[in-house]
Length: 139
Image (cartoon, rainbow, N blue to C red; front, side, top):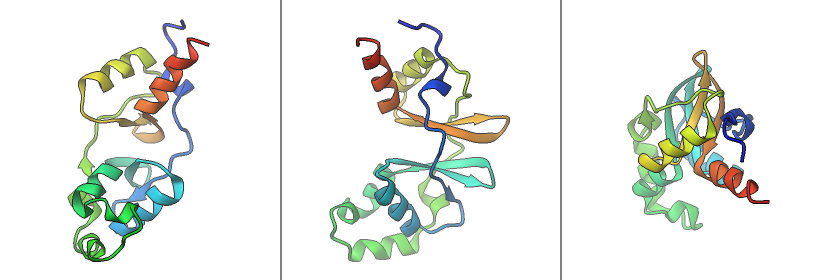
C-alpha cells in the first residue's frame, strides 16, 4: 500500500461551484444536473462555504430530489445560500496525505472537503474518493 500518497491523486480537479450570491434553486439545479452531493460556495476563487444535498433536504424534506416540486420551492426563494451553507468550512491542501484525510473524515461529521492551495480552490475530495482509493489498494 502506498503510504504517503497526496490527495491530489484522488481529488476532483474540475469543481462545480456556486457563487455566494446565487440563489438556492441554482444549487438544486447544479446538484441534480451533475449528480453530486457537495458544492463549494465561492466568492471569486476563494472558498467561503460549502453546501450539500443534505442541507437542501433539511429545508425541503427531500421532495425536490424526488421530482415533487411545489411548496418546497417557496422555501428556496425565501432563503439565501449564506443562510444555508456551512461558512468557513475546513479545507485541506492538495499535498495533504490521503491517510490523514481518512482520519479527518472518520472523526468529523462531514463528507467532503474543498482542496485549497494559496487561498484558491483547487479541487474537492469526498469520503467516496477515499473509499475508492483504499479499495484500489486491494486489486
